[in-house]
Figure 1 (cartoon, rainbow, N blue to C red):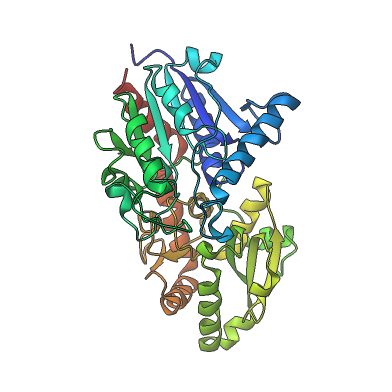
Figure 2: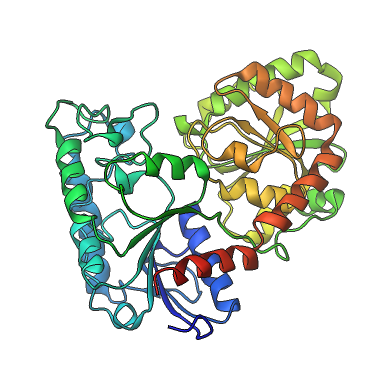
Length: 423
């Protein structure tokens, strides 16, 4: 097939824009279209108006999609350790067969993204592989090569055969995780499967996994439109959001602020330490929070005044938040390649995060931000001090990195080059 002919590409994603993986998939759709290719995005759930195609296009199909989601949760409920890990593990037993969908049938390239919650099962992924078309799968977490968890933490069971799973109520050698590992190990071994990881960190984990042994694995970052996410006047941005233009703001973003893996408790401790060290500056500083605060107690006794924007769906409002902030802080304990860091950097906002996952690949320590040692609130505090002293200069470097490494057309070409290896 000539590389000059526009490709027919179908992208598969659970949702069209809810969650980081869905956002990244949508941005890749736009980037590939701008590169001149015919791209369709099929989703199980859709909200708002965009180019994505909902597979739940009728009340009956929506009901079936909901039943598959519920069936996945009920299936796992009898195995789960407790409800706190309920959405950290997906069995992948229930899903729909979309192998005969017209967009899939006519595609030159089938490209999966995040497909859990009853969208695609292990069986329905194998149905796609059996079409003998080039299948590319961008991994946004570890699910494709584990016995069911999305992030294994320090566990390296995925390198062998899983089992003794920490997410299960009764871990043992032949537990649910080992059974699901065996199922994937059998059904994902096809020569037309190609793996893309957004970070080298996840890529290295994928390469060490038993399930993906032999599969081509390439790291390609998520794309971003630098003409949408760009620096702006901080004072005007603060006024637009109803913030005090004379205050400086530290920005924290999480879909669920109280989720343990988002590390807010470490940020709280770091802010307390920083405020004690810089009492005068603390009077002129506030914490700006974007996300759902389901547990108000987590915000109690915070050393800084807090301003909450709640859930933000509007891109323009999110950009104003980045532009308003002296820094973006992400104390997450588990991350791949966060869109939020990329967005903040594109807006000229330096970032502070722990040395976990792909974060050190994005933030160049003391060049465009600060990388703190994992679980070290004192180092996080040092990062706040460092960035506030050099916020403008670090922000310029942050923007420069995004332009040269994450700009949408650059990422689209990297995908197209990888596609061509299979054609």
